[in-house]
Image 1: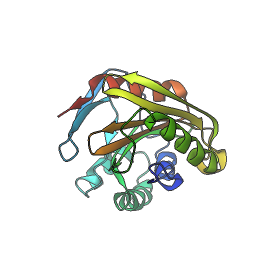
Image 2: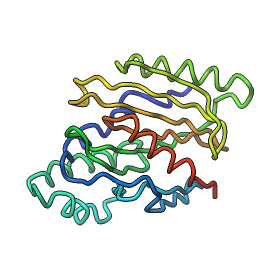
Image 3: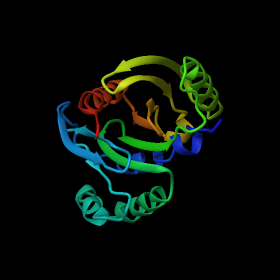
Image 4: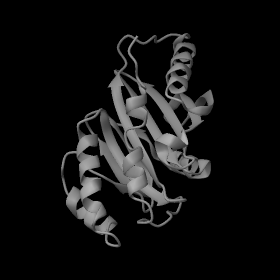
Length: 210
């Protein structure tokens, strides 16, 4: 079976998150920017004041100019991190509220669902694999559950990230959404579980399959 949630993928943006400390304001929970992913057939809204970062090179410089007004020296570091991210499996990335010197973020990986069970055993196998991989990555207080979301019945995982990796006591929430030929892995990372949950609620409520 394919590995859909490797530690490399889960941790891809922790450096970016820390580097953005102190630059953004806390968002409202209402929906804001609409994101359309035509290749994989879905769309959703971000919470207001969350900022999507294009991973194709488009207008990254302008976005970072705005984000780093208080400390322009950060722009070079952030540009390198985003360039690195563009070469990874990440299909979407956005940053949001700051708390305790950590920038909350959302990223989405899309992988093929080929080889995964389509029957009743799917969630049991998925649950076991997610627990194994995140535990091996050093994540703590790991909890998984099958949840009924507006976009369908899916697997959800919550966990604490090791301070050595994030620099602060960060929290994570992941959704594993199996739909047709793909599995969408949506990762929310923040220092507050409430921030992850608020962002997840906006995304879930606004998600549409195209």
